[in-house]
Length: 477
Image 1: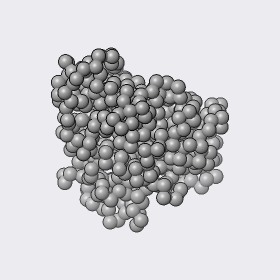
Image 2 (image 1 turned 90 degrees about the vertical axis):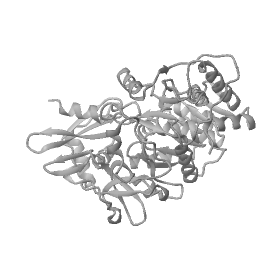
Image 3 (image 1 turned 90 degrees about the horizontal axis):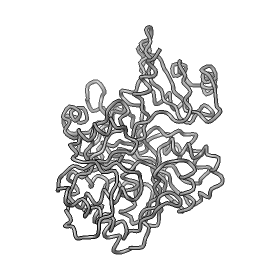
Image 4 (image 1 turned 180 degrees about the horizontal axis):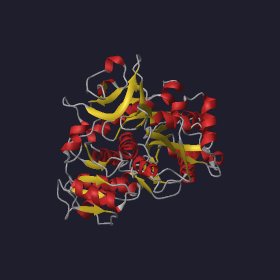
């Protein structure tokens, strides 16, 4: 099995002038030869101070340079810790300590070219450390081997019929799983160019898609919704787009349909996590009801199970709901130096738990009901925050919704929903309830507290909604 370092060198040999990375619509670019050369220069710069097996952290903007830094460290045999550029100092300090990093790289110089003896790491061995999204507190450190992302690439290649002729645009932070797959691995394996943004904005993304004739876009739901609502959307030629991979949170059905209608591209997703990789996927062959209302068909090779949330017994045959668990090639290597967290992550027989309650129907289609911990228990009734969010997101003007529990002396918990809305949009709880009543939404899912948020909902460094912050706000008087 190859590594990214070997793939980049092969691309530099066979297609030296081909585009590897572009930043935005008119930012710096790297050809495959320049990418390979820059990685060697970075390795040369660090060779005297970084030993094989040393743990080195990287926190840099998302340009081609960060990927060359990852490859340069790979060539030294180092283990890289990927830290999101938006990570707070407290979170960064926590990750450095938890990973055992000896140094933090935030910029690289321009060392003269010199010969560096390249290490040849085991694709199945520890290569990279990154974090969970930190939505409920300080994040855990996740162990990655390159083999999992090569295996993930094969899944994506089949799902979207990817080819070397595709042009990618990854809107995700480089250090996190979605960003690694869509910027560091799949484009390189295909020998295809990838457009990245050092700072996301809807206009910058739209301009980059048009300028580089992007065919495959990758971004979380909030990003594509912001692009949909941008005044500049219709000013850009997006006809090159054929696929958008999204994920990280529930895909809003109506907005995804609107995206497909207005851009002509097909919305696809994988269901999984930084830890598990993919358990299920949607493909170009799936109808909209499967692609946009479910998490797609389970991936047979991942041996997906449903576990009873109370006993841990295998209840796959019942169709669930149960805690989804899996065991396969795209799993991570567990949490770094954290036996307590690993005991929660793995079952006694080695399956990796997702923490999500899911169902699997007779056709093998998986649907996520919500996090096992993301339920609001009102008067003894378990209410799925994910289902509430999906309903509230249909309210005109709502870009994104997040439901959390608000403590209540009578019912234990009540439903509190935070809504990020379009500029100038305002409505109250009665307006929202009237909308939900018109949809036929059951009353037990109606929010009892509404908070309108200007701009976006608070997010962890990985881009997911920081529900820990929202729960703290909901507890305020």
